[in-house]
Image (tube, rainbow, N blue to C red; front, side, top):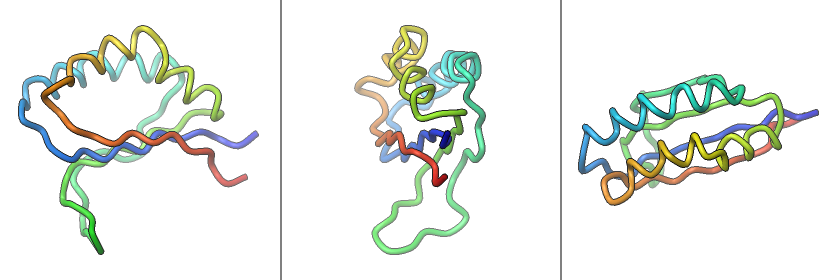
Amino acid sequence: MAKGYWVTFYQSVSDPAALAEYARLAGPAIQGAGGRFLARGLPAKVYEAASNQRVVVTEFDSLEQAIAAHDSEEYKKAAKVLEGRVVRDVRIIEGAA
């Protein structure tokens, strides 16, 4: 079974305190659902049309587990903290088998 990944690209953060609160809530929700953070932070180098904003890559044992974690009530509570304060693009993809 192929793994599942969240790839999150932050476009803007107008409230750093909201991002910190999100991290406080989301970290345990994601890890409790089986997620493992593989990479977090600013890009070392950007190419093409990329912006120099925060990127997070999170691994799950399966695509289904990745989707279920995102759709869980615990994670939704964390994500709500970002509304109107952080713009980001979250993509859930299946790993190459």
